[in-house]
Image (cartoon, rainbow, N blue to C red):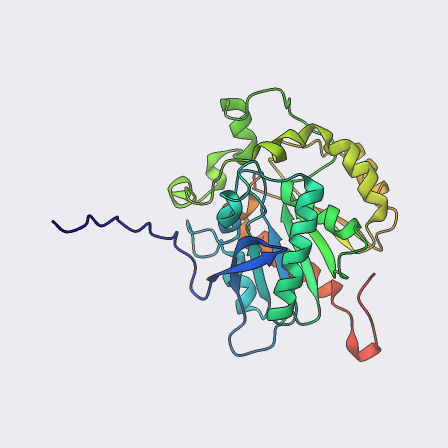
Length: 301
């Protein structure tokens, strides 16, 4: 009798030019998606950090050809790395309960060192982050051990919750906070995004209530330009004018703080019809952060 053969698990689809790589995060393997400009040195690099309950595929949306940040960035001359944060992707087996924010910061800093030692990053690196990934981006930028960054571009993150965190994560009302009106997303979004969704690790979820205090501690230590984007239908965070004035006033050391509002978008901007518009604005912000080498400029430190 011949041995039974197991059916191989097919990897989720990716956009043309996107490939899967693994980075070494001080002994922890972190999976990632990578795209690079074809036959050219990149102008700069974008490192994308997904939110809670998502994965790196969030930045390579498959419901519509114009959704993918990885494809767009490479076509315009940038290297784009979308990282599966610790506790997601390949590291989920190793870290079933995930990591705290400070532990993630240390792991991702090591992964970025591995990345920049192996791949061209041009003028430097911008962290593009969504939701919980934005917390990680701020933590990385505030840490003096993190190499100099060009800037931070964060969406779906504020400093004052607009939701009751005591409500179960899977409850219907709480689920709506992630998406907003379904008309904001291409048809077949939920089928195409099935492989993007992942359970939020327990240790990560346990830190959610502590974010307002953590932000207060991190904000004065951010010394690079920051762009914050709030979707028109953002429901997780308070983003009225007074809330935003208080938020930006805490970023006292940042040389520049930009606040944008993305029309016709819900919390998961990069999976919606607004994805291309948002990603183009991100790359425009990155261009503003690239030092003018003809004038002897240097990255913000």
